[in-house]
Image (cartoon, rainbow, N blue to C red; front, side):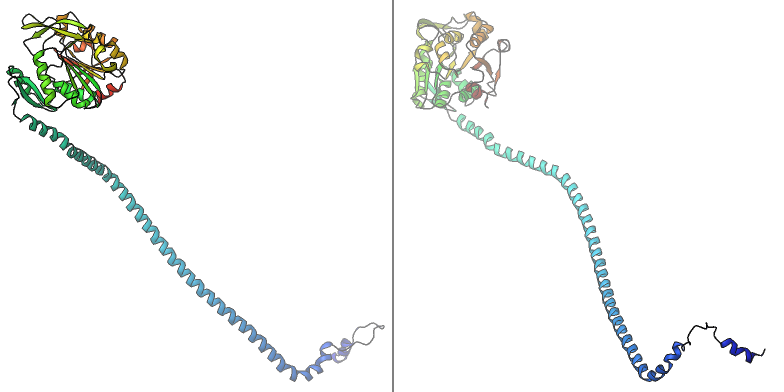
Length: 413
């Protein structure tokens, strides 16, 4: 069969007999409408397309503009961050440098501080030394000024000698004794004891000088206690007592009472042994090789003559009769808990009167006193005992109650 004949058969649809007639394809349905409307709709479509495209492009340009602005801000922010980082780095470097400098300065200060302290210490020492100069040179100038004064022939019997606290009188008939006083320091023949009495005696006190001799220590105690106090000086020997009286009047010591009595354990009349050596006279017999004469003297007890039994300081120099004086002042000791006693200790004197150093010290200890030996060169007072003191030829011993105010004054330098 030819192709022309087969073609119609191929184009004939294979449809069911019950199906209705088939409609034209969709494209063919609207083809006419499209051709009719195409000239009108095509410009509209182009316009719509261009409008929409322009809007999108505008939006895109706006978005690009914003992106560019954000990018600029990001660049500026990055630049600021970089600058800040640089500044932080510089600050960190400066802190490190500062820390290193601080460490260096601390190390230098650590090295400088000891030197500064040494300088300050030396400065304080130098200032202290300068401040001490007046105290060092002042007394020396005073000493020179006092000791360069000439001896004064007070009257036919007495020579006046200038001492630290005033004039003392010495018997002109005893040139050796006058020379000794003239050559002594302005504190006298017992300078350490003078200083100790100045520490012990306070203004207004009542004090006793038992065995006052010419009154060198009476003068010291009188100026220490002052006009408001009272000094009772006992001297049974006529020549030194006469000079004691003159010393009192010359220096205007109206509060000093001079008594021509000896002091002992019992009141009464006793033989007094007057030595050719001034200051060696005693109620006890003197050595055979020491010239002496005997006189009768009145003996009193301190308990009987102390005003209302008040006594603050008692100085005793009686050539071996110290324990007799102590025995006659039990009431004074009992009534004056802060009493101080300064007594001469002489092993040879004790041997002469039949006593031992142990007995002597024990008597004071039994009365409640602690013993201190006085250094005449330095004025120091150190604790002592019978065994230690027995080695000395002669010394003054200060007796005070342990822990009392008198002990504190004694040890104050």
